[in-house]
Image (tube, one colour):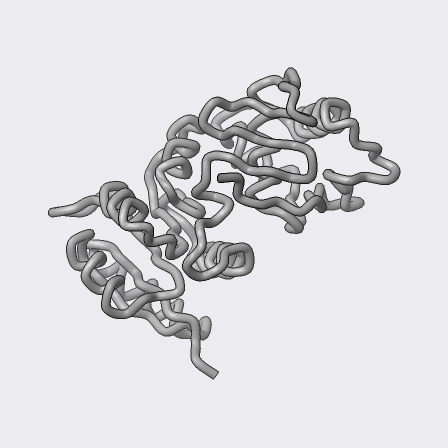
Length: 237
């Protein structure tokens, strides 16, 4: 059985060495590059299953590398290694075409978890849910660029945070998502809010989507854990 191939791109040799060893011990085949120029060349030759891409690098940084890939219609899944903390900057990174991001410093095991999660929800050669601007789920449409949500073709009124929660759900369909994960993704841990605010936004979403919590079509409660988005999600051209 051929192991999943990962292209690991970072200009710091100690980080490359440590992560390469950890990923190989986790069962992946790892190829490395030290900057974006080298990464683009290797990606063309080796066709990795996923790319782990640092943002701050010489010659060609991670974001520009990612932009060039997407412009060339290369939809290889990409996880950005960033140093941003603000929610707006995180959303910007995802809108540039990343499938996920991981903020430095991080636990290598967390990277493995993210890699496996991204691979589960992406299809080789196709645009992923995380890198497209418009998503459709049954009769609901999310326009990520304008931050608007439509139900049966009519715009529904949602708070900005609820739109972000819905976006996180629709880009992670059928995954169990804890309240802590939603707090981190939508509010950021720098915000002094508690888990109850997540439940409040879920109530708002269910009301807007006309979703019955007892017999849900969209958002399912996972007792003592969090939530799961159960409706199918597709890229809308």
